[in-house]
Length: 203
Length: 234
Image (cartoon, rainbow over all chains, first blue to last red; front, top):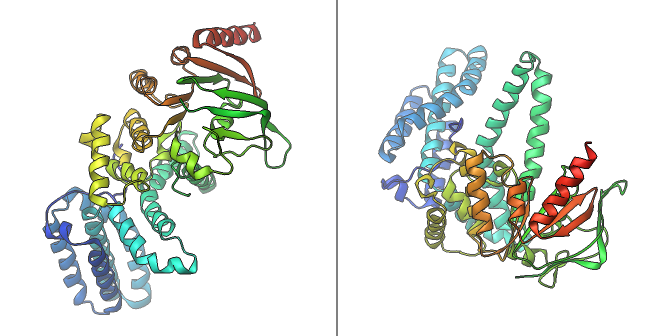
């Protein structure tokens, strides 16, 4: 089965985006995200989208990856922009849609060009000073990377649960889908907790 | 081989509310290279296996790995005892294969470049090099279990505990994973429903209702188990 959600899947390469150190790369992504969110201009939105597309092209992120990732975010983006249309009109809706797609593309590009373990190392260094107040940087970083890693698994569980509900003729009952889905997600979290403990990662 | 000991006073495990006993008083010393554990679902096999690296703590008694009390020296014990689960999906938490092996190596190798090199070597050793940068979700069931095992073996543990590692696999992959486990130089504690695999172990424990009801060389224990199941269904 092909991964239904591609966040966190590293694609090795030799572009300058790949070579850019992880810390600055994450900082630039944060700055880019802030700029997209804080700039309230319909004219700026296509520029942000063009920047995100240019970055993805320079990094050589596979087209399939971009399309699938964009498709995944598109449902959410369309819902958000429909709400914006209702509140602020079509111009704001278009800006919201384009902004969200630009953010998703930038995130996918960083994700595809950065191994998760490098992100983990960077986070450990960044959170390091908090060790003095009792924070364990390794745990914080692990929790962060697990959140990224859990996305494809959770989506796979959702699809399996939906199929199981359909197979029993219960496809149209949200409770028949949501209850087992939540139970399975919690059970999987317990199993992963055990697996991490067995690997000594919580010691 | 390290000695895995469930001490002489008898180890028991009960549920948190104390209402159900999962493992009756058990005293064991496992020193053989390949130890099999067989028995029905819910018989207490997994509870026994989980005691060996502190995933389950005994209600009474002590579990020792090479003299180290698992309850007191959990971190040290987990460095020595690797654990492979039935469902590799629970065990593989990183997006790509090489990153998951790297996660196992984090405690042992601080330098990212050296860690990546070692992880790639581990994948190469287990025939997974071509999948190094592939999503773990894109692997077949057999490849996932091999990857989970590779993640365990990457840290070179002295003991490998495998909890029904072939249950979800097809015949070919089941044989592949089984052969790999039995050929390991490490001490192996193998929980399985595959009786052919169990019969190849040096010693096999048969567990029933939280008790070890038979304990001996592989073929003898397997025969005793089959006989007991046959009698129960006559």
